[in-house]
Image (cartoon, rainbow, N blue to C red; front, side, top):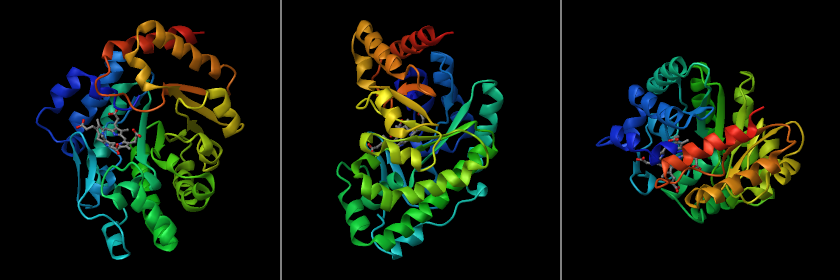
Length: 319
Ligand code: 1CP
């Protein structure tokens, strides 16, 4: 339940007067914010508080996270010369991540910590567009228009992302999630050709650690098989595809994550329960299921609804 924190008054209080990217570089604050939804809702795992653009900021890309907008990049990457903004990342670039993950693992005890990074395509979209985008037109123009430059851009991002995930795993994260939030904008043939080799490189780079690797996207119904093929152990599905059908598309040997529509949380409790039942029913008999929302928690979600949802899922799945 990404960004569960945003709906919490205790989150807004500790973030007061601190810019988003600054907060990601303050290990004690990161620890506190990561623990807040675990304490309040009793979820089964914590997701590390950070953002997908943190590793890019750490290597010197001039960008900011603007309130109400998201990541904004000062000099978008559109030409070969612009690639110079992207160098490799090492643990020394993100000492605050190592410190925060270590503190969290100590505090969390038996509750697993999920580390994460942005996938090459989704990071490329922010870098090429210069900010959030609905249609990803500049990104696609580069992808189709200059496949060589595109491949080099995604390769550099795969190297950065792999290193960033390794930092989190080596500091103690028990699972990692690769967020390719916007890759649902592509058709399968293009995903296979322009994106999959680079995401596969990231999954390969962390395979040796033996921690579960989760692959997340939105609107990826047509890509589910390929998202699994890229190398993940768990494939996320949004609410548009029922989980049994998602599992059929992903194929054997992998778990499925999802997929309650976060907008359902604004409906009366009986409706939330009915929709949750539908998710759990579709997940019955799967090889593995991680209950989750199909996308992040919306900021004005009532936190007590989230607490009740967690309780209800625990009740329904207790053995
Ligand atoms: O629960 C948590 O807070 C976990 C931390 C987390 C994660 C996993 C944040 C904090 N961001 C992310 C990942 C992230 N960031 C993704 C991938 C997951 C997804 O699809 O939701 C993406 C696409 C981003 C980019 C981003 N950062 C956006 C989306 C903009 C767009 O293109 O529509 C936004 C709004 C941000 C800012 C941000 N990141 C995180 C928070 C809590 C916020 C809000 C800013 C704030 O509170 O000041």
